[in-house]
Image 1 (cartoon, rainbow, N blue to C red):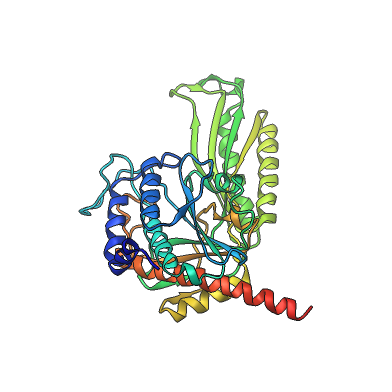
Image 2: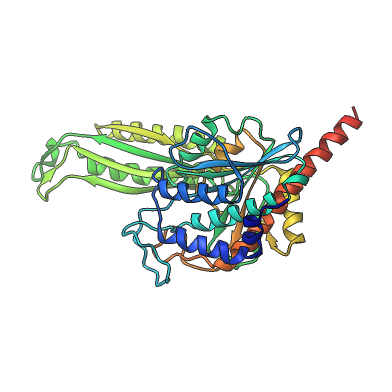
Length: 396
C-alpha cells in the first residue's frame, strides 16, 4: 500500500516539483560542494520511503526502489551541481548566492528525476526488477561520474539512462540518436620557452611570442586539413599569456585550450598531431615547446537498441522526438556508458540563452512530463530486459 505522504506528493506532483525546482535554483552549490543539495534530496527521498544507499560519497547519493529481487537492475542518472556564474535573470526565484547559478539546468534534472522516483515508488510491488536513481555530484568538474562508479554501486546494473535539458528547443521536444550525443572533452596547456632580450635587440632573442603565434596558426590546420570534412572535431586556443611590458621580449609564453571530438580514434590522432606541431614548431624557431594534456570525459555513446526503445516511448507519451544531439558540449555520462549500455536523452525546456550564460532559463512546464517519461522508461526497460532474456533462453 502506498503511504499517505507519497500519495499526497503524487496527487500534487506538478506543484511539488516546481516548488522544489525553485528552491534548488535559489540555492546553487558548486561541483563537489553540494552538501545542502544532497541533504535536501535525501530528506525528500526518505519522506517518500525511498531507500537511500549507504555509500562513501561526500556529496551526491544513490537511491533504489527494489521490486522483484531476482529481476534486472537499471539506473537513471541526473546531476546536481551548479556553476560559478552570477545570475542576471529577473526570475522571482533567482539565485540567492552571489556568483553561483544553476546555469545548466541541473536543478531541472533533479526535480524531474525525483519526480520519476516518486512515480516508480508508487508501483514498487509490481516492479519486476530494481531501479537505482543516481543524483550525481561534480558533473561540471567531470569527476562526479567516476566517484559514483568507484563505489561499485553500478556493478550489477544492466542498463543506464541519463537526461539533459536543451535550451534551443521548445517544451515537448525530445532529442536522441544512436552513437555520440555529446563530445569527449580534453583540456591542454602549451608551454613555450625561448630567450628574452631588450625589444631593441630582437636578434639576441628567441621570441616565444613568434613561436606561439606560429603554433596557433599551425594547430588550426589539424581540423581544416588533417580531420575529414564530414567528421566533427574542434580545437580552440582560449587563453594566451606572454610578457609583461612593452619594451622587453619575454622568454616564456603560455597557451591553453580545449579539444572536442566524437570519435576516439580522432581524439587520439589530434593529441599526437598537436604534440608534433608544438615540439617541432618550437624547435624550428630555436625554442622549446611542451604539450600538457588533461584528458576528461569521453563522448557519450547511445546503444542502438535502447535508442529505438526510448524513441518509441517518447512518441507514445507525446514528445516530438528528433534525431538531435548536444553537439560538442561535454558530459561525464560517457564514463558510465563505457561500462554499461544505455542512452543519454535530451529534452526541450524552452528557447533561452545557451547553457552557462548568466541569463539562461528553464521553462518549468517541462518538468512533470519528463518525470512521467523516465518513470515509464524505468518500468518499461525492466520488462524489456526480462522479455529479451526469456527469448534468449527459449532459443538456446
